[in-house]
Figure 1 (tube, rainbow, N blue to C red):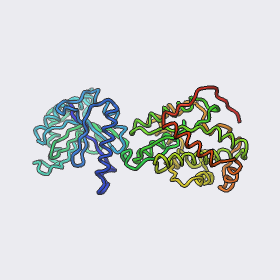
Figure 2 (figure 1 turned 90 degrees about the horizontal axis):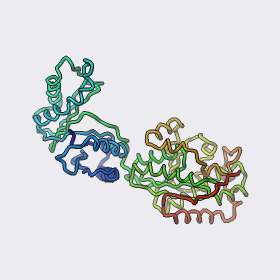
Figure 3 (figure 1 turned 135 degrees about the horizontal axis):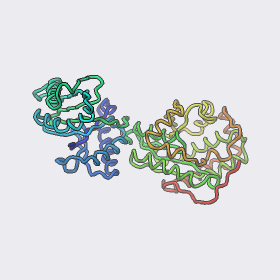
Figure 4 (figure 1 turned 45 degrees about the vertical axis):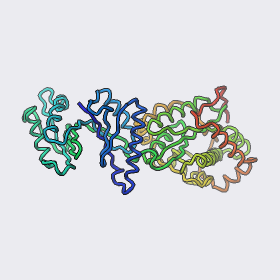
Length: 417
């Protein structure tokens, strides 16, 4: 009984003269994700209203097709909400027929066992030539509901009704709908530029990537492994996380860097308790080189202030000083409960909790430094012969992987401190 899905945005609406650019990006993303979801649907746009309809607009969606659209549209950044709708001529008779057609199915569950159905009508008229005002449309359709079900079986509640019949009257059509579903909101992915996310197998970094997508960023991913000290499964896990995240955007690349050789140098030549901070500085330097050559405007991490020893304010300042790039930490004020809640909602949590060692656990110090000064970190790095050459080679080797799925050779996994 529905032949369209009405889509609403919020943040884009407050944009100025460049709003059309955001709308174009949003529509392009919708078309891409719908196509990837196996849906041959059209995305239409007229004066601030976006909707989806079948390739043959006279046909209604099946229940299965609506479920598929709901699954896809809930992953479109920039959309605030969406509703399956019946598009009809902008005439009161057509609107009334559409409401009469689907009202029994909407009201039936609420009328069981002699209960009264609590409802409201919400009308919005942007077509100022329409003969009835919004309030008059609402009153007329409330009367139609009383005719269908009887006034004794209905109750109007304008504030908290579980049933809302929505009507939108435009110049080109009228839309009638009864359900709304939440979308992620924010800005269309890709409208704010490209960033490089340091993606580990944990809970936080995939959430950080999601939050940056929500702010309109196209995300590529960089992960570190330490083969043969970490198993191939550690990168397979990150690859699965990247695949989940790419379900929200045009696919970003996953770069994979083997840090084991440089970690051995740090282990053999540097103070033990400084290792974790030195690892993080090396990771940022490698990320900086990759970001520069892949035109990423910022580096993103999943760090939260105070969560582990390397994430104290002093250590984060020392880590950041290794590069001049913009470092974004969208989770800096999150606690773990907040990260878990988002991870569960976006589908990364079950993969993130699968146990697999990562680079930061290799040669990990027993008692890591919590306040390493920048100059002290630099002195430790000066102990490593050709340190800059190490960074340059690792950038080259990582980019030579062509941003594939990050697979690493299988083999024995050696772990030692």
